[in-house]
Image (cartoon, rainbow, N blue to C red; front, side):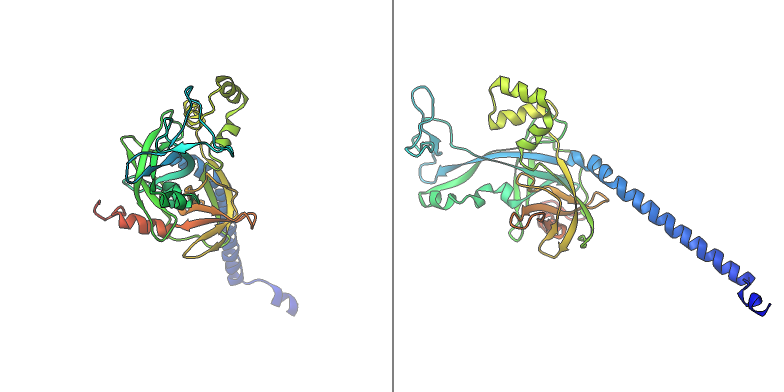
Length: 323
């Protein structure tokens, strides 16, 4: 009887137990809600941010500083490019063919009230990664952008962009739209950097045209083959006309976050440079910048704080006057 009395619950014990059970139920409900939110986040983020992520396509050539002439292909009387003994195209400032172009692709995304386009510096100034530029500059030639365009998802037409400013302390650049309407959706910059273990979503156009062609379907590929026109610019234009311009999305986990770089394991490759790295709320935490081929599964992004620095320098952060 004594032991039974000691083990019996008092009214106060029951009140405390009810509070404890209530707190646990609320905690479990909150956890369940968080899990449901996270499971739905990827699809929601992709759907909401996709219109703001554009495909960048460009080409640059080389101009002679003294004469102002562009380096061109040398062609024969029938317009066919002539080749050097080792099979390389014959180029000359006195060439009678088209300008010698070096083409590239990349990704950009819109952010801010003024809808500036953010990408990597190495996308906006691609010749800085061109190993042959130094030799050409020694010959009195300078690199020059010939054509720089963008395609936004769901639009059949391309628009032109130009460099606004490139960052000096990070692989970042801001572009602006030239005589064309860019995406109306603008991505929000996260207030702080992610931490190791956070889930992220990387949006972009890895491998450029190849990834979109792979998703376009057999009918489109057959039509392209029958046309006989697989030229760099033409393929992109055909993809846009058939509404096949759309970024890919990959999920990953942040492995490391420093003031200089965000490291994550989402799969991406060249062409995805300049794409947004998003948290599960769809806010930009970094800009996709590089892969580490020698360490499979790791990619580097430029932290969102560096994007803020770039926009601040342009007077494009909220509360700042335009420049």
